[in-house]
Structure formats: structure tokens, C-alpha cells
Image (cartoon, rainbow, N blue to C red):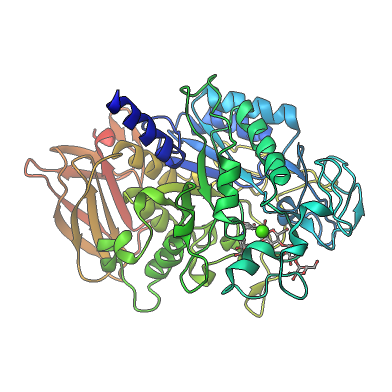
Length: 512
Ligand code: QV4
Ligand code: CA
């Protein structure tokens, strides 16, 4: 009995850190701005067959419609109500997506924007994605309903009601983030409306939430909401399963609020990860890949079992949020593939892969003045569908990084080596490094300006392996280069610094 109670207590305390992905599926993909109908198809035709565990979706609730600038992606971070009605689709399309993705074992993680409603300058009318009336000036959102009683105006202590100083935790939590009307999450009523929204999603079948702008909410207020959440739907999940929670807190150090304050609620985004990895792979600030030997907690990151990690996100790939110019994105494809490859090979954290759309970047004085541009859209503002080309890449300006061979195969690598220890590190004291995961996988990088030619101990069983970066294993052959592992576990690696992708990865499922 006592053991049973301990097990229950353990599950209760730790459940919200568990991504709830199927065993052997270790990453999720952020399909930024995709339509629900396209996500449903992608789960069935690509994500499930390639071992992806889930999808982070853009905010599904009703938001303001902005026309100046024209339909920016960030209008979706300005809620008008909790109706499931957005540029990605309506409630029926949402339910269809969740059902179809869940049925193939790819789970849905909702971006929950619950710190605020729209900006104070949002005006009044029905310019919202479902046509619900609102008045930003009087803080009236009858479709929820919220009224001026439900906002933090009385609590915020700054003169203009805005966050002015990130060294003052009270301001950061109780004042307006870039004018966004700040919800009074201390109130039972507001908490209950947010919990009702999230429970509606849980009952439809979602597996967890990205908690947007968590830094701007008190951890205790969040806990009061999270404690009201239902268990996941037993149509797909074991009874008693708690929703996965990961909180967006940008903590690069040096502010009043730290990521650790949120560990009691769930996982937290580790923003140091992408900022530092970008600096290393770009070889800025004297960094080199040899220093990655103690990557993870050794670099001052939060503990691995609390971390949600990514190379770039929808903000910092376009200069919003944190990380600055070091962040690697699809625009720097060669370096990006190395960064994502490193992340997926390394055991630290729970990994999220970014999947983007292309926009016409236009730098003026170092800033992209088109950083607001929304997804590929038709002249009426509706989002374009994701078309699939004959070579499996995406059309209509959808980048589909998750379909790039190198990234898709490294997501599979991570599944194959899941649970295996970091092992057999080698470096040349510069930018040539290698490491393995137990005796299941091995990866070698050459980010130096000269060739790599090296015999290394891989820990893998003897055999011929297909390098999953330069090609794919197809039947008993390999479309890329092959690597011979000898009976002593050694293999010889040759990587030109001019190679299309200067890294090589092998694992036991790609043995010929
Ligand atoms: C502007 C001025 C204000 C002014 C206001 C007047 O900046 O000072 O008071 O006009 O009306 C957009 C505009 C922004 C505008 C605001 C309100 O960019 O200029 O204010 O709307 O009209 C996204 C975008 C923001 C966008 C916001 C709402 O990144 O640019 O603001 O959506 O549409 C911090 C936070 C962190 C946050 C990060 C970006 O700690 O939580 O900044 N990240 C998350 C999301 C992000 C989102 C939000 C939070 C807000 O990942 O995408 O912001 O939900 O680090
Ligand atoms: Ca707040």
C-alpha cells in the first residue's frame, strides 16, 4: 500500500514534465501558422511514418484581425475570445486534426495565450477571426466574457500601465507587455475561464500546452489554473495522464525573474540553448565545438529533465524575443542543419524542431522591416495550403525543415538512441568533434576550415552503416556514403570542409 501511494505521489508530481509522446518518439515539430487541415494530412502522410512525436500548433483561439501591417503573424498573440476559430481553421477542422493525428500516434500541443487579450490600441468592433465583438478601449470581451474588472490595471504600479523595467518582477507580471491588456489571473473568475478553455482542448484530445508569456504570469496563478485541468482524454491516453506543460520563460540571466521559479508547474523553455549553440557553430566570441564536450548543465543550463530545447523559434528566427543574431535558422541552411543535428544527437532536454514559412526579408540598418509578415496567404488573407512537391519538399513558400533529409533522419536517430548515454567523445581541440550514444549511434562534425580524416572509436557493432546525413538506407543499400565499423568498434571518417553537409551520422537502424 505504501509503495502504491508513493507511485501515485510520484506520478502526480512529475506527470506534467512528461511529453506524453508515444514510446520511441522523442521530438515534436512546431508547424508554425499551418492550417489544421494540412496538419491532419501531415500527421498521416509524414510525421507518423517518420517517428515524430507531436506537433506544436499556433494559437487556435479567436484573435484580433489586423490590417496595418497586413495580417501579421503576431495578431494570433492577441486573443479576442476562446472560440476555436482562427486563420488555421474552425472548431470542426480542429477536432478533425486532433482525432486524425492522435489516431496515428502524433499528439497535439497547443500554444496557450492566456496572459493577456489584444493590445490596448485594438479599437472596437468585430474585426476578429470569428467576428466576435470586442472593445479594447473599455476592456470588454463579451464572447468570453471578460470586462474591465478582469484586468490588472489596478495592480500595475507603473505610470503608463506598461512593463518598463524587467528588473522589477511585479511590473513584469502585473503590467502590460507591449500594451497587451493584462488579465487578472489572481481572480478566481479569470482562472476559471482560462481553465475552461484549456479543458475544452483537453477534452477534444490535445496532449499538452506551451504556456505563452509565462514570465508575465505569477507561477502561483498558473498553478491555480493548471490544478483545475482535466486528465487527458482516455480515448487515446492512459487514465490519469496529466497534460504536458512547457512554459515560455526567456531567462538568459540578469533579470529579476528566473526560469527556476516555474519548475513546479512543468518544463521551461531553455533559451540559452539556441543562443549558445548558434554562437558556437558560427564560431563567434572565440567559441569552438570542442567546448561542447560538457554541453547541457555544464554550460549553466537548467536540469535536462526540466528543459524544452530548440535551435530557433518563431520569435527569434525573425529578431523577436531573445537570442539575437547568433540564432541559427533555415536562412543559414548549412549551419542550421549542423545545429539541429547536434541538438538531436545530444541527450540534453526535450527537443522541438521548428518548421517555418519563407517571407521577403528586408534588412534596413540591421533590422528586418518585414519581420511582421504572416504566412503565405491569398489576397483575401486566408492562409495558403501546404503543397507537396514530387521530391517531397513543400511548395507555396512553406520551408518544412522537418522534411529536410538531414533533420528528419536525425529525428529518427534520436528515437533510435533514446535512453542511451552520451559516450565516446572526441575532439581535435578545435571544431572537429564526435560522440556516440551508448552502442546505438555515433555522429562526427567537421566545422573547421580543413578536412577531417580520423579513425574513431564508435562503440557500434561491426558492420557497414549508411550515413543518414548524406543519404538514406533503402533496402540493403545506401543512397549516401557508407561507413565501415570494424570488429574493434573503430571506424575511419573523412569529412571535407567543403562537403554540402560537413557531418556524418550512423546508427544501428541504418546498418546495411
Ligand atoms: C506596440 C509598441 C508598444 C505600444 C503599442 C501601442 O511596441 O510599446 O504600447 O504598440 O499599441 C505586437 C507588435 C508591438 C505592439 C503590440 C501591441 O509587435 O509592436 O506594441 O503588438 O499592438 C508577439 C510578437 C510581438 C507582438 C505580440 C502581440 O513577438 O511583437 O506585439 O505578439 O501581437 C518578451 C516576452 C515573451 C515574448 C517575447 C516576444 O517575455 O513572452 O517578448 N514571447 C511570446 C510569444 C510572442 C508573442 C508574445 C509572447 C505575446 O512567443 O510571439 O509576441 O503573446 O521577451
Ligand atoms: Ca501578466
